[in-house]
Length: 326
Ligand code: GLV
Image 1: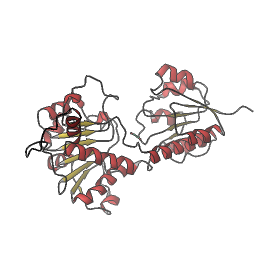
Image 2: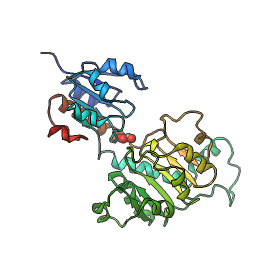
Image 3: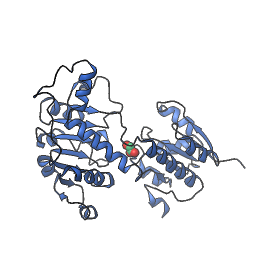
C-alpha cells in the first residue's frame, strides 16, 4: 500500500522532519524564500497533508486544486490569517497551529522592542558602528522611562497577558482593551479594562497583541495615532496590517508619537524604499518574535504531530477550526 504524501513548505527542525518521514513521504521546499504560489500549488497537488508557514497563502481554490484527498493543513505559527479558515471548514479540513509554546518567547520579544524603542537602542547602536560616538553628553539620546509608566495592551490574550505580567518588574499601570472583558486575566494581575480611546490617550506604551481580521485591519490608523501621547511608544509583535504603515510613518516623522518597535510590517519583508526605514525612532526586526531555539523546535514538533494526526484521521492537538469534528 502506498504511503501518504505531504508537502512541507520550508525546512523545519530535523527531528520533526524525521518524525514525519517515519510515516509519510514528505517533500520539503528547500529554498530560503517561499515557493511562488503556482509552484506551491504544483508541489501540493495530490498530497494528503500540507505543513505551511504564514507566508503561504492557502484559500478554497487552492484546496480544490490540491484535491479531495487533502486531509490536513498544519501551520507552523500561532497566527493563521494566511489560511482561509471558512474554506477549510467547508472542505472538512482541520487546520492546526502552534499556540502556547511561543507565548513567552513572543512576549519577551515585545518587551525587547519596547525597551529598544523607549531607550533609542537601535539608533545608539547604529551611531556607535558608524563611528559617531564622540562623547558623553547630558542631552544626547534621551528616551522615555519605562519604570512607573502606563502600559496599554490591545488584545488581552495569552501573549498580551504575558506582556502585562512582565510589566510587574517595572511597576507599571496596565490598561487593556479587547472585544470582551478578560476576567480570568484580571483575576491574576492588576489591570484596567478600558475602551480603546482611553487606552490610546493614557498609555505611555501601547502594545498590539491582537489577531489580524477585518475588524483589526488598520486598527491603528492616523486617527488612532493622533490620540496617542507625543512621547508614546507603539509596539507591534502581532501582524503588520493592524497598523496603517503610512500613517505610522507620518506620526513618527511629525512627532505625533515618540517611537515604534516593530516585529511585523505590511508587506513583509518591508520594501527597501519604505520611508519608515529612514526614521531613527523606529526599531524594526524581521518578524522574529518567536525565534528562540527551543520555541522554534517545539513549534516544528507540534506542527509535525498535527500533520501526522490529520493524515491519520486523528484529532489535531491544536486545531483552529474544531467545528470540522462536529
Ligand atoms: C508568528 O507570527 C506566529 O503567528 O506564530
